[in-house]
Length: 403
Image (tube, rainbow, N blue to C red; front, top):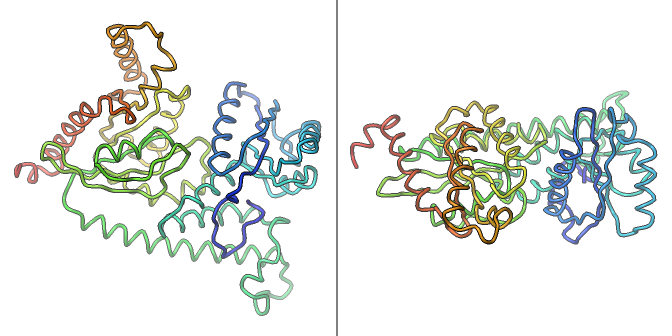
């Protein structure tokens, strides 16, 4: 966890055996109970992805976070009592970022590990990273997150590089620790720049083809859809951030070739340093010609998920690219929302109205599919190839003439 990171050591995520946790959320002024519940649902799924089972959740309404313990004294005592009565609890996970001081005080009072949302996400990324690029990006994000939280959490880091000759006159231990972390950040940035240059060179040497990028919230089925469209074997799992490394595959429909890339999923409250570190991975999105924005229509918060992704695409300056909004898991949506006796004609009428409503709300063409049952996959292929042909005519007209 955050206070177990050490400079120069490889991170492999939470311990593999199951850990038990309680999660804590705060409803601040202007927020709603429903929103806090949604965030905690997601936090619980994040914890499960990392290997922790949530035993209980605590919520408190506050005008502003407490500077010492984030939550009020009474709530800290309530959580402490619960942990005392349930000895299997080994950690408390907060849905918001904590300062090093707050972590210290809470650990002293609760006698278990204290983790915040960003630490949890970084831990999952550390476990999921496979390539040199992803590992370097995650480690850089960890170091940048660690730097302002050093005091009292990480000590004797100079031993990682040897204490003799490393400490200047009058330099304190915490200053030495900060210098070591800054040096590490500098080295990781240089390593990442080198990896990025190599990746850019590989992209330049690809054949002249239209590029399509799959984007969307995490765990909406992008990798499963990638496998269907390209007949490849991209890792897919019902957990958050199953895919970190961008996968690019060549596909051809109706004799028209194009490149399809699967990218890391987005999430609300994504740590800023993680977004910055993974900007290079998202170069596939920047350099794409078409975006397939995949959403989970069966998720009750799919609208918020779409807006989160659209905002991140806007931050990347790619919101104007031709985009097809693909609502996956229509089969699950029907299971959750339809009357058992609704006939096919009535179902089609309901879905056509919903599709038009979603197109009006998000300003993009929309389709319903199920990657699991393969429903409407052929229709998606036909619509995608028409978009690809349009891009060839616009971007590579000399290539299109050879078909």
